[in-house]
Image: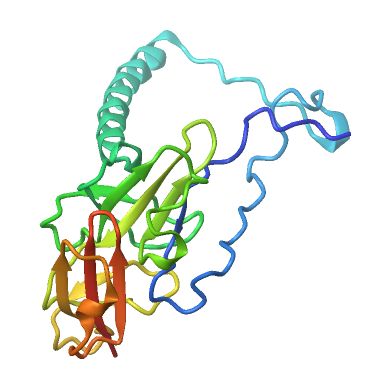
Length: 229
């Protein structure tokens, strides 16, 4: 029998873009095999055609001291970068926070937290669930996009389009690309929010408008009437 993976399951972040996209219920792309081969210690040095690892090069004291000083600077830089990445991680996002998602694909660039006023902040967290298996409010009938993480830190973010009435978007019809706010005169535009109603979650509010789609979000109750082009 095969050995269980000693490193546990790969990161489970699986952003999906189920609303308003063709092929919206398709199965997310499957993860790729690990690029680093078998874990250390699984094969003895030289076994199975694998050569033993080379011995570390010997260094004099002077180069060691110089490299040590540079290494300390690198470590400090990595710590600062790690703190920044931790603060911007979607795992720290809560309802009301906004994110930038460039690709709704497995293995794509992770979402990052962003100021909701930033034009690149294209989605807002409507609700954060404690497990990736939970359903967003309203189930499949709701218009949420989702970002799910499975494993030791399992959670799901139910996402709304971060846009207001009169805004225009590109990539609305794309299966994978994140929404992008563009001028309504932009030739890449493929959607316009003709009406946004807070406090109501029913597509009936779009009656009498030019909307061709309705994004209905039960929590917080919001309806976006979208004219797709």
